Length: 127
Image 1 (tube, rainbow, N blue to C red):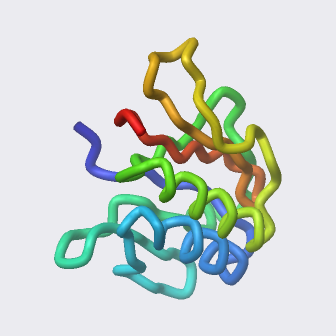
Image 2: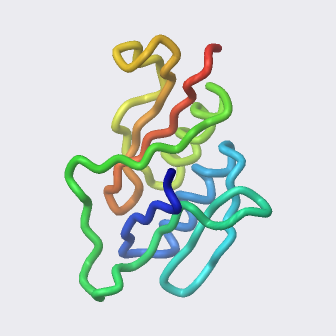
Image 3: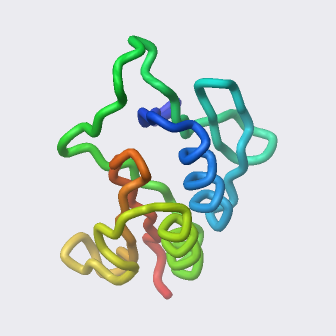
């Protein structure tokens, strides 16, 4: 359904560190690396998650109500991605766990990247 998702950053280096760690357990790799933009996706594919400095040269800011949801292959990957993201400067918005108010198998974790963008890592499969 989506071509790509882009989040703004004020520090490309911090964004690389955060998303490199967060995306690795999800089977994603850095596919594009430019001075002001970095993109991740599946090996052999195209970048579908981007972190970039804003084109208008103004400071990146967080969109209220926006969450980027990344699909995990299993619950262990949710745990690993959350741990890696936190180690790379992420801020907790909800530790890994079931959120059955969404559906019985919704196992997710929420955190903010170093720029404050809200990221969800979720597995929709049974344990």
